[in-house]
Image (tube, rainbow, N blue to C red; front, side, top):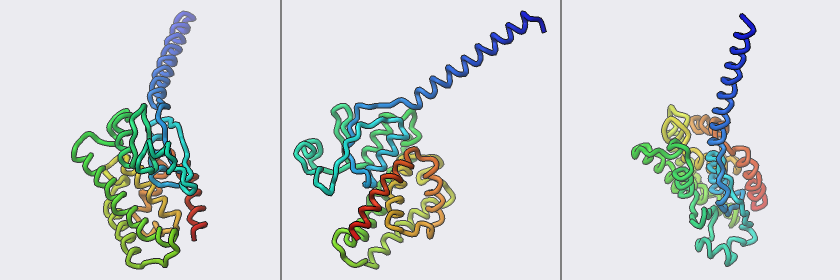
Length: 248
């Protein structure tokens, strides 16, 4: 090959490399876009708060975190009650728009900031399944947690075997939902997985035997790998574990 041809080949290679690098940079920029005008009122040990944190991480949203100490009653201060009359966490304020209830927040974030509809499908039937799983998480799974564990932790009451059956029933349902699949609402990650990951990890904090439900255990292990923010969730969960130990 002549020197001229070598020079031409080198120039083409250089341009190709630059083009590839440029396209990758553009892609990465779109992948890591952050939105920092969103205030996030939260308590790290809270499962619902941890779900929003993981969703924000997944969507590339940089939150203005405003931590509240619930044990000290900071959620009852007038300035927060003015923002959220129910004085609950998590609560977001997105450029003047206020919203609370974690699963409502997850839907809002996915719809507004998702680069596509994979986390919350636009297809009505697929979306309905995601909604069903979110309602199951709130109204069945976490209700069973609150009904069984909170009286023991907060009121020092003895364990109620009948309420424990509801916990087992909830996990049996979830185990059925996950038969033959790695995600709770279809064949890919959705906000339902993120919400349930926060909830199921809360059960791990009280040493519930997730391993007795093989489909749940398989999903749980996979979700820890594929959901961004799992490490932060686990670190915050340690605070919940410490609180549970104090309350025993």
